[in-house]
Image (cartoon, rainbow over all chains, first blue to last red; front, side, top):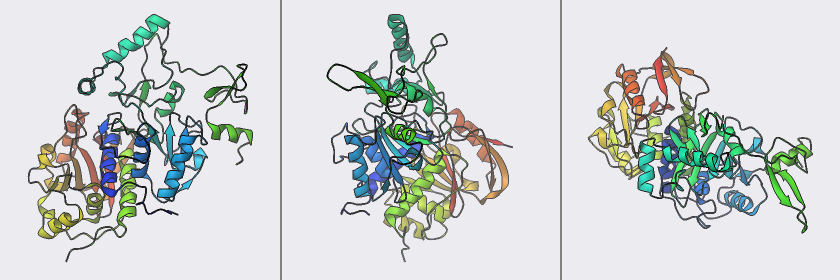
Length: 281
Length: 191
């Protein structure tokens, strides 16, 4: 139950309406960044306030919320945001991907395939895919309006010319519905293919930068590449030290002070379920 | 006498928004909206959309039959939205099928295509009538939708609207209590 005197889901109704209108326009124009007012939240900008505002505008009493930070349900940011919504909205929370109706994420898409009826909410630090290439927002708006993405292709080409391959490992730019180049948020490039024609709804919130954007289900999301240099997402050539998975995205961890390394699944729910044979721990 | 809005303003608005989100994400999906008690002839679905999405920041255009004194008073109390007489100034336009001002609505600009109107269009029903084939984002391959009471000008206008992409007007077709979304990306063709 909601045990605080805050309004349901913290935000006032006027703010929710504005975010809701932005979300609907975002779904109607896949990949286009819609400006929104972006309120103060009870944590600093840059800590997921965009994702939290989207979650607060979307969440209802019957939702089951999962929050992950780099794939993990048990890190500080994930635990705090989960507790926040269980206090201000009284919703049920879970760590199991398939039980959740709403998944707020910082920088991963779960390994367990998403299904219709699920909504992903991404915390986005930098919504503008062209920001390292063109500092002026007035100019990037114009480039998006003209679908002029030559700068991005030159950047990828220069990567190949200098390093022999495209060196972006995360926040790898995608073309959405054949029109807008979009920042998928700093998810690993490994996760990009999960956005392509996904059955779930994907909502992106950038609180500090005051932008909302969205990818509807079954929408083309293509990672930028060249014919002779196709998209090749990077992943550690190893198996998870805990569950043995070779198909999931792995984190590299140091386990002692002599530099011994191990790889473990970044998605803690996936890893735990594999170890317990699908049963809840 | 002023009639009420949602019985539970916060949770009914949330439920209505989730229905509209689902509708907009999956064009052609029929969603039902929570009940409320608007003055006639405003349909409940239109009122639910107004209560959920409209406020003083959203200029409204109302088609002749909806623009009664009672509806105006209800709107002033529940949404405080300004009413405009030129459809081009509206962010939400509520129209009856035959008299919708299709080409007059704002399609947004190239740099801000989100500054476009949403057309809420009252039709007769979704279970029979003219079959339409839908394709585009949100639809796995294609879906066929029957709409009773689609105006003749609708399909021609949708084709012109699609050509404006990413500019364009988004449509919510409504009956008394249900809605279907046709965002600007949806290709609508006769079967």
